[in-house]
Amino acid sequence: MRHLAIALALGLVIVSGANARSASFDPDPVFPVGPISDTTSHQIAKLDRVASRLAGRRTTVNCWSLRDWTRLDAWRGTHHYPRAMGITYPDDHQIDLSPFICEVLGQALARSANQPLFTAYAVTVLAHESAHASGISAENQAECRAIQTDTRAARLLGLPSALAMRIPHIYRGTIYPYDEQRYRTPVCHPGLPGVVVPDTLGPTAELRPFERIAAAAAQSLRGWKNDGGADAVGPLSPCSVVRSRTEEQVRFGESFYGPHGERLISSSIRFHNRQEFAVARVRQQTLERCDIALGNHLNREFGSPWRFSGVAHRGRSRASHGSGCSGSFRQTAGTSGTTTESRGSTPPTSASQN
Ligand SMILES: [Zn+2]
Image 1 (cartoon, protein in one colour):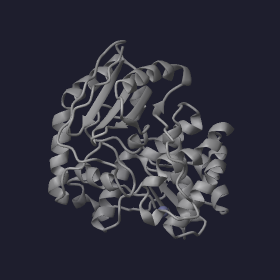
Image 2 (cartoon, protein in one colour):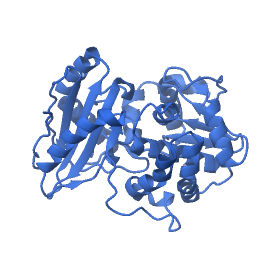
Image 3 (cartoon, protein in one colour):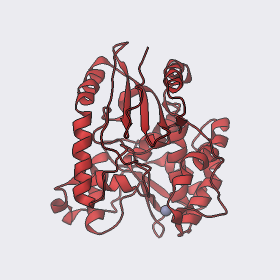
Image 4 (cartoon, protein in one colour):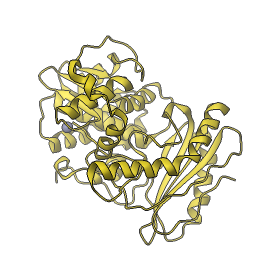
């Protein structure tokens, strides 16, 4: 099982009021075979084949719709199960995956996006659940097995060989070091420090201009550590200017740590059309207010100091304490913009698009 600390909190925001309807909810339904869709839950034949090969036994993979997964989250909450990115029923040889993981796997299957970081995360979740389906119950053994089978999983999904070989390296260097202790084992050690993989989406050629923007922004942050895009892995915050990752045609994001604990997350996004861009601009204007309201909600729910990064990792968050945020969103080509979110005591220099 893969779960998320902050997703738990966000789930409470999203599903508030759904519990009353969860009494008749079936958490283990049979879905028809179909395509990956965020509006209709399906069993996914292509993922069945990958999971079955990895698990060494016939295994089915369900991709839940956003609505159904939200109801499942609510049901699990009322039954004291943790929220999850993936769930395996070993006796039934069945894997249930969240809409976020399925969205990324769908893009990987379609080879429609260049996003090694997100792909590494989603492939590892599938490999992790497949390890459970093979009979491995211990989380750290399933996680280690997932890392060891990442390349095979990626190849089975049809990813290019060069990327398939990079997947475990990317995962071990960016995400695995922040795994909860119970997911880690000395046999599978973290990757080398300094692995930096930006948060990307889109064809390589279209990413290049955005890479140049990010490089210019990074030059203004002397003494700051580039942490790549690992903070971006996870479902979108309810406050995000992007409502769905399917809105994004191209995305390039990086995060930085300042010398005094400052935090800066920079994202450049090109939307498919002007309408989506216009909506994003409006949401950008309410981002601060939404962030603060969300932070206050988390305070009330969990009684802890505001810790919010807009990012979720399963098991724990790399969020830093924050007391405010600032942002900019500048239009240049009509459908693209750069957002810069900073959190910390010293507002850093904003990134901007030339
Ligand atoms: Zn697990």
